[in-house]
Length: 111
Image 1 (cartoon, helix red, strand yellow):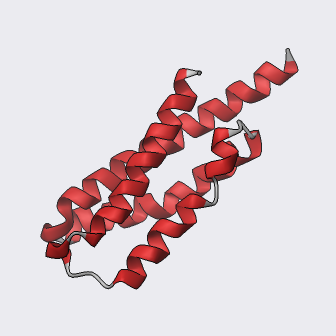
Image 2: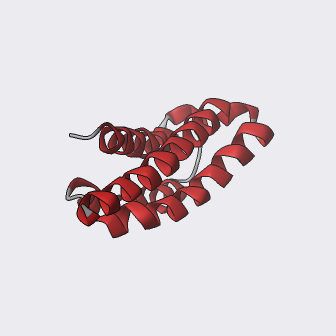
């Protein structure tokens, strides 16, 4: 398995677990918000596992939403700083690794 694919999958998993981490009882967050944040991350999973270049392209746009959430929670909410840091770091890593892996898949098909 290519290292960029491994990085993309690991970043996706960390991002997904960060969203589910909001279920922690100390956060007192409505479960509807957690579902709205976690469920969309399941949509690209099949494409990530089967190396569909199109999926690796558009997941980069999807991560921008999570990056914005992570930055806003990191700056504005002291109770959710760990969540904000994990979300920001994972979304940035997923963005970079998926974009470069999509480029790699494109160059591999051109050869």
